[in-house]
Length: 221
Image (cartoon, rainbow, N blue to C red):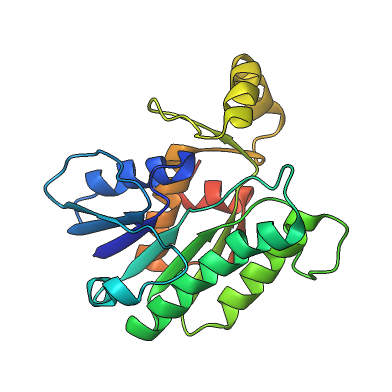
């Protein structure tokens, strides 16, 4: 299997990359982002691409893939809706539309979030934009799946690049064992997300939108 990863320097993206470099059936992994991850592996190739809204310059390098894992995203904190939509919707669709043309029918897995608003009409700005993004992806000629994790536990030395998330994680880390017991279907780890994405790319899944409980079910957690 040949796979693309967008956003491999982020917390979820790091977990995804780690799992795929260890998977024997993933023969080639290509990351695309504004910065290289710095990882070293014979089956890894990194494409540093500054303009994530336009892929004309590297289109020839984006053909021939079986799956794409889109983990690129930003926090909506302090952002106006137009700016958040330009990044969340605009950059995601720029990649997905290009890939759907170059690799029609490929598996495209998008990391959304718990609470995403599929109606696009709710009060929460980020949830509306995420819902709009999900709906647009589901209309493309792709095998598109939406992953909606709740709270994410970072494993294997992985850290979020977002300062607020790092602070919150330090605060909640001692409580995670208790929270996992109390809310087993609300917390997933970076390892579980990566393994679940790979499983869905291999075999598909009965649902196109996977909540945290579905992500855990895919890997038998």
